[in-house]
Structure formats: structure tokens, C-alpha cells
Image (cartoon, rainbow, N blue to C red; front, side, top):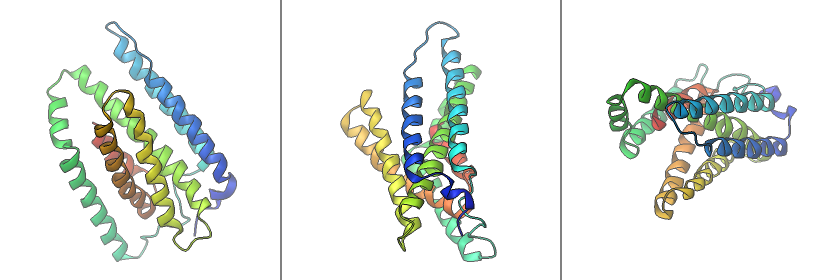
Length: 214
């Protein structure tokens, strides 16, 4: 059922790599450059760090697929489940995160600003999906391999981690705002986890995540 590459690296190794990669990403975001090209230097560093992180994560998970064969192949009811989850995510995006309003506001800015925001959003989408829905979810699939609820337990566990990662926002915002983000991230993480499981890949999740961060 699962990809043969799943157990080529241990769950512990995956989680350790996830921790190292995450703190390296946080450290890169602390860099602050001034001057007319400072913003572009920061964006360039972020792109490089995310690219390296994706390479390291792929070294651990080998492939973005979780299963040898897609769960939805030849099963129309799985397509209905995917459709429902996608609708939920879209409603969640435009309701809770006001994605439409955010995109409209950004597009009113200058072209360099729009490009900067778009690249930053894509970096966040790629990094967090490869990290959490890729590396961490794979690790928890291994951790809970003897449970009947293996996939559900892995989805919940990785989503809790995804929520807790947002505690880093305490460095620049209030506790109330941060705890709200932690809760929203946990719910969104569950939806994105199921999208990864049902589509047997990361690309749909990356697209949705990037739109949220735009």
C-alpha cells in the first residue's frame, strides 16, 4: 500500500531533520537588510534556504507520493471526498483568512511589492508543505504503523505539530492572536493532510497554502 521508500529512513531521523530544517528556516527569517535592495536580498536568501530545505527533505522522503498507487484510482466516492475537502479549504481560506481581500490589496501595490509578496508566499507554501505534510506526516505514518487508525493518527499528529510551529509568532504578536493562529493552523493542517493523502502528492496543498499566505 505505502511507497517502498517510506521506511528507508527512520521516523526519528525524519523528525530530527524536520527540527533542524525548521530552525534553520526561522534563523534565515531573522536576517534584516536595509537599503533599496535589502528586501530583494532577504527574498533571495529565503528562496535559497527553501530550495536547500526541499532538497534535504526529498533526501529523507525520496518521493512526494505516500502510496504506491493513488487511493482515488477507480473510486468515484474518493473523488467526492476530495471535492468536499477542497471546498472546505476554499471556504476556510476566503472566510477565515480573507484571501480574496488580501490578494486584491497586494495587487494594488507596486509591481516589485507584488513580486516580493508572491515569492515569499510561494516559499512559505513550498517549505511548510514539504516540511509538515511531507516529512513530518511520513514520520508519523511510520510511528503509528501498528494502529488501525494509522493515517488518521498521522494526520492529527502532524497537524498538531503544524499548529504548534505557529507559536514562533509570539515574537511579534500577542498571545491571543498567536493562540488563534495555532488553532486555525491545526484545522487547516488536517484538511491539507487529507488532501495530501487523497491526492497522493503535495502539489495541491502547496498551491492552496501559497494562496493563503499571499
